[in-house]
Image (cartoon, rainbow, N blue to C red; front, side):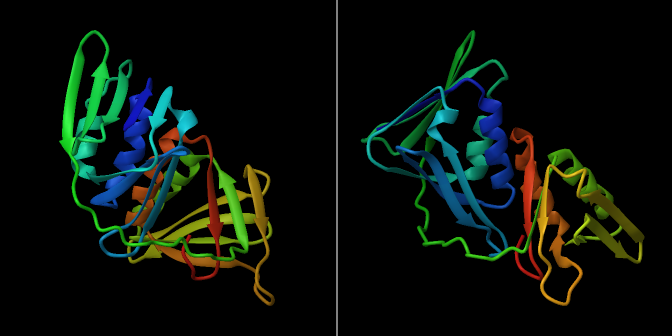
Length: 230
C-alpha cells in the first residue's frame, strides 16, 4: 500500500516533466525515505538519479518498498491537470495494478493509470572525482544556455581560479558568459597540474532538458572535470 498527499502538485509535476524530456519510462520506487527513480535515457547519454524525500509531502505512507513502472509521458499529462490550488493524492493499493492520481479542490477529479513492466536494469552512479564546482542561481545558467544556443548546439563549461565560463562558437558566431568567483554562491577549483583550466563540452539539447528541473530550486550546483560527465 502506498498513499501520499501534496498541496503543491505543480512543483511535483515540474520535476517529472523535466525527467520525461529525457526518459520515456522508468520504475518509481516508494520507500520509507520517500520516492526514488534512477534511469538512463534511450541513447545512454544521460543518467537521471532523482530522489524526493517524504518530508516534501504533506502526508506519505508506504508499507515496505513499492515499485511502480510508469509511462512518464502519460504520467506527466495527468500531473499537468493539477491546478495551483489543488491538493494531489497518490494511491496504490496492494491488489491494484493502476496508480490512482486524485486532485481535490472545489471538485474531485480522479485518474487511474495502469502500471507497466519496466526493465529493472541495475544502474550505478559513476564515482567521479570532480576538480571543480560552482553553485549559481538557476536563471543565470538558463539564460547562458539560451545565449549559447544562438550560435551552436554544443557548449563548453570551463573554470579557472577566478571565473566560471560558459562559451559556444561556430559558423554562426560566438557567445560567452562569465561568472566571477565573487558572483557565484560557492566556488572551488583545483586544475590538474600544469593546466590553468578545467574544461568539458556538452550537448545544449541535453542541458536544456536537465535545467527544466531548476524551477523548484533556488540554486544549481555544477561539478566539472576535464572531458568527463557534468
